[in-house]
Length: 313
Image (cartoon, rainbow, N blue to C red; front, side, top):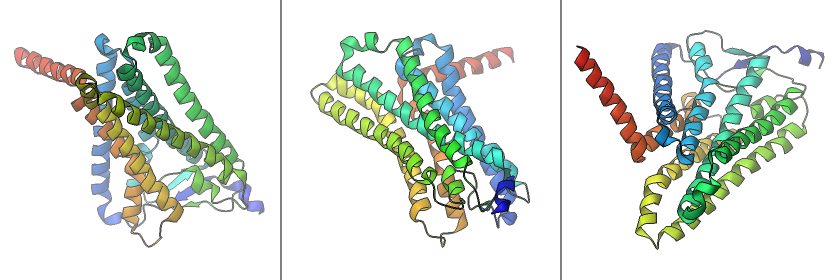
């Protein structure tokens, strides 16, 4: 027990037995990370530069894309480094920082998706008061509280996990999360049960709110072709984004709780990084293709740049 206080690094065992295809994995992962940056930055820059897109729906979308970059930044640089390294370790502080960023990114994802559902509810069901309710000041306040609540919940979880006395430093994963760190504790504590329960309740509450919003929206839109058109254009991408995030996280969570160790390590790794791969790419692509304004602005920008290059040549 005297040695528990001298843990300075954690060992990540998720990348064992990859020597034969280390370079291929590195190239594919780097390509995926570049695509994530490309599609998300495209949406962010388009919304920021085009004043006609300074509306609540697009501001929320911009925040969602920024959150995608925030969350993946805690995983991909370290993962790429580990792919080329023979030792897969992470410092004590770095492990908690990575866990905090990954968890808070997930919490912010659910908060922002709930805000987007509320925005669509007001826009379609209460259009006469939409502009008075969804002012820029209120939108900024909602985004601020969406982030701060997620940060607070995960900060509490991280602090309560950090004060645990640990009897091990081996994490069977390709990245750090609070649950697996808490599993290394020498004895059971509130950090492993009560604190995560608040985070799970927060995420489930947001999912239930989104579900209720869209059930109500579908009922409302059935009586109007115009409202149904708005719903299909602006709400379908949102429903798809929520489904992708929930399914990705659900697979990983169920595996952590009930998974078998007989599952191949490559499958475990894919399940672990699924929510860091699919949602950050699919969210901006879905909104970019489905929302007419963003699609037109991006195409006009690309065509304008292409024409300018041809003119110079």
